[in-house]
Length: 497
Image (cartoon, rainbow, N blue to C red):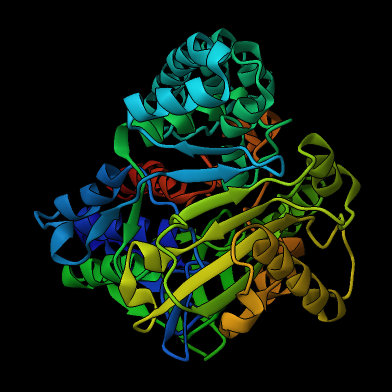
């Protein structure tokens, strides 16, 4: 029988979930190989250098830094020696078409002043909501976030806590129970969009994000989010892990109820005692396990699931510095629920939109040449299963519309200041990451697609095949995929003992 020290594991995909899992396995003494199709680690946290600007593609909001530091501490190392996390304040500046602006952060006195200014009758309601969010955080993140849901009985055990916090209600519904002002309702519910969830349908459990941000802060990795992924890769190799870049996995082979071998397009093959995929969940089963009955069976089941929307992102570099535009802004459109319905339910490309504006160079000047600024403007769009348009035609049109809205609301002479720009659309997610229907966040985070109802951290039938990342519990976002790595690593190490 293998022991941990003599066991070999492979992790497919070097996104944040795959990197975190590989570090945990290697730290536990499992000889681990991390295989990545791209030439750089980070997965969706890619980076592009263009005309002196650094354009960062990945998740831009870093929360729960303690969960990241833990990955280094497992082997007695210090994350600070590899990467600097910089605090971001305010967390977000929210702006509406009626001219109302709201700065959201964990500076409680400042936040209360903002609420008193925008929604003075809702201060008490906000305090009640904060207590609710703290309770949900304790149950949903601290207690359940790192727990693998492998059978329905585990879901039954969690049910009382979920019922106590009315998990069947949506985030927006729960927020609306506590506060009445529409601006504040949107300010306290939009966060689910950062993990692919519709505030109108995503479980109220996701209100835990408020407590997560309040306790741990919001951070930026100096040099870009991809620098954090690079730092994780250095830590993995420092403790003896093997990293294969630029070698796309073609097949995961099986014998009976076991996965046995990883084969890459280059012809490289290797046998392993356990294999985990950080790839898109549909890609993992439909493509990597195509030669097995389990892969075909799961692909059929997954085709009936609801997938998150995609996003359309315009990256642009500007002449000049913009100290008055914070790191994270949300420019809400004239509609909230109607716009969300268009994206999540109707699959149309609406004329109006809400924009998440990312301005990293205001925090980290290294992201742009001297005297210039780096931005990206992101709008959620339906995935390609719901919105089957020709993005080669639609992309340039939508790019112009997005930049025109940013210009109208924040930077009047934006067109004259643009040094360089490009956009990233749903087909890019499909091409670069095998993302089913071009989704940006894997399965939509509905209650009926969470915990046991989500991809299992260990497959039910292939006893040594595992999942990590956004498609498995607890879901998308850096804290989510890092938590999934903790749950999956525990299962793998226990099996390999």
